[in-house]
Amino acid sequence: MMCPAGQSWNADTCMCECTPKACPAGSTWDPASCQCVACSKQCPSGQTLNTTTCQCETACLIDPVIGAPDGCGWAGTISIVADSSGEADQPPAAMAGFRADHASWSFSYNASLVADPASTAWNLGGSVSGVYHEVDTLTVPTCSETETIESTLSESQAMFMALPLSPGTFWIDVLMRLDAGAVITGTATGSSSCSDSTTADDPLLGGIVGFQMSPGPASGSSFSGSNPDALPNDFELPDGSYVKFKLTWDLRLVRL
Image (cartoon, rainbow, N blue to C red):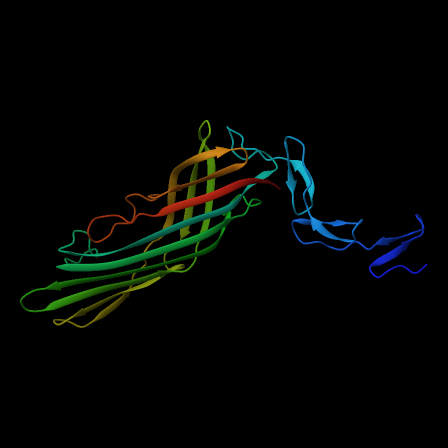
């Protein structure tokens, strides 16, 4: 028996049948039409549709005590951004050990992180970049001196925890592992009309940096929110103010 293209003979049913094909995410194979169709199955209460397999699965719902129940993990995205620049005369917090008449600075930071629901340790991956530039100047009757800091951040390890704070509210704790000398590179360059120029390594940050206690609403399987100042009083600028890091997250529980 000759079957049409894309079909094969089934000796048990004595009929030509479609040859199943792999379908992209969000669709499933329909033997009646011999093609991939959108997955639109209706699931009973307490279950959600897995669009990859087009099967109903027991829903992962937030546990008010432990957060993620057994067999479930957090997926989604977390972003951390900061942008600050300015200048000041006789700044109180210029480069350590350098009394400046004037300082100018600029700082930018961007972390775009993706949660790995199967990981229990460093469970965030993605890109992290940061640049800090500071120029301090000192002028006295006999000479002038300028100190410049240039530091960059290219990568890091990160992890987060999401835990209950109160009924209907969770808090998120994000830890960034920034190893001085390993992921932070920079130089401090000095020039003076009274002495020779100098250059030295100047790591910007090191150790563990925590963006902590940012609360947000949590219901069903979703936890999202935003904190415009998630790292208060931790990164001081030359004028004595602090960088404001904006933390935004959009997380959901998925079955492992």
